[in-house]
Length: 255
Ligand code: FPP
Image (cartoon, rainbow, N blue to C red; front, side, top):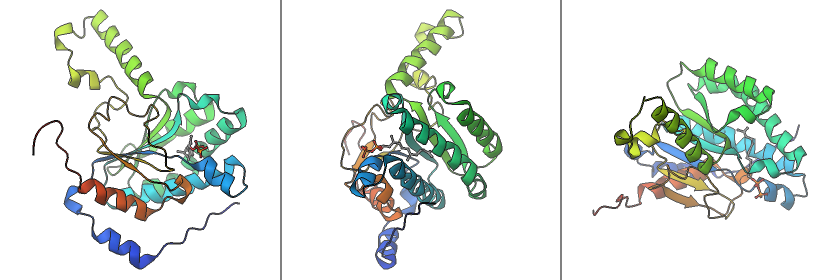
């Protein structure tokens, strides 16, 4: 089994951690887990190894988000555009999802984590759907972190899908035109009932949204880093949170 060892300076990381204002923890963090392929390439490893190493980072980050009291963590695991990747890679990603849900189930439960997903999971292989359904069922009574896996998710698809659902409700008379507003529209999105992401983290040096949470990120703070996702550490999460806490969020208004 391939193992990834990550060294970190404990003194330095605890100094970073101490700077976090526990009274101003973001409610919702979104992460675009980018750079797995480049991480593997730099090491002359197959891309699949990069994704596998990325899952190791997921484990650490989920645990830490849970520890520090983040309520929602949305991980961009597979986009509506990722289907065009080579079949082998798509299969690897699906297998990793199944492995993760199976392997982490006990620990996620011990950490009081609720598993949820956003996106059109009807298109995922039956094995993934089964593991996901079991995971929803087995974690639904937990009360801690909501781990939102974005699977076959695309922001544009989310909006189009919401329009279709809204059209159905208009057609059946459940909703009337005068009732439509931004708030009501949000309830038709995959993220219904969740707060918008306070911060979206994207490692690997890319600075774009790539169809992630388009509607929901209207006032989100963005945090970029050069580090590839498999090398992303708990201290990087802490740095992102501290940086977020120092931003001046005005939501279009004045301070
Ligand atoms: C982007 O890196 C990463 C992805 C498209 C997949 C992320 C998925 C995982 C880490 C594992 C599966 C998910 C779960 C929840 C177990 P890239 O391949 O585009 O990197 P590159 O830009 O360097 O090629």
